[in-house]
Length: 427
Image (cartoon, rainbow, N blue to C red; front, side, top):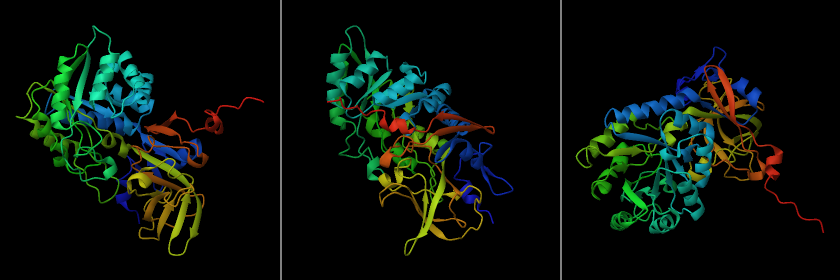
């Protein structure tokens, strides 16, 4: 028996062959594992492009003066940033590293927004020197630094980030809009920052920015931030941030992009000027569902009350479980859904931490050493937070489309693990 529910979590267009083997974007995952090794992240390229177009159509169909900015932090590799730029999206960059990768991707710096609650002089010099279009001012120190860095005769466009006072129903680690958040300014302080920027000879206040949090499954929570920033006055730009959630599990039911856009624009009408430009910053909801990670099972063993299925990856390539407690699902690549209702196991990683658990409680059909295990919805933040814990080599990223696959990020080599070491001088 095959369970269609797990297939629905894999990238759009995924399919199961007559032999029960899973394919993504026309590519059999067992073939990709053979070609690129495991673990490997597979991204359905056309699914990402379709999502970008869906966002643009949904918002511009309701508010023509809308820009969609991809939140690069969700997947900050040059191939993804290049794709988003090709599809006409702005790029939201959080820090100097994301500026560098975006520039390497060929993105227009004038179509970038720089975020960060603790921007350094170096990062702001990088932004100003390369002509970043908008700098999101998070604090008064940003203003101090920009006034030192921006040369007389120039004007750096800015948005002021405002704490909207919305307590998001999400994990505390990704809630950003509540009182006490480290991001942004309270409304009264934001008013003072706006006034100061308007007095500046080298800065220009184009508008305001806000963000409620990440992995939100209720569009009304996202829209709750509109009124608090609209109350600050009339501006050319209102950036409502991102935060729309992705469907990681069978129980998750995030709003459609259309429903999200309708909710946001309905809330904005009458509160902001009709000619204002709206910016939204999707990240997780743009790429998460388009990615999956393929592992090879290395060990199956009983540990008292539970069966551990260990794979050749773990918290080195997916830190979301340990950091946020995010739930994932999984399937054996060659037996997708077969034997539904089989033994419930704990999928664990290879790292020396008891917290290195990928999925605690998933039914797999007779898992055995050598099997390939695919985990869907890994296309956001997994690449971002990849690490070399226990000397793990960071995994490759493969784009799949129309039955063809291409490597866009290679696997670390052993030499990469030593690349930053400085040899001691003899004597």
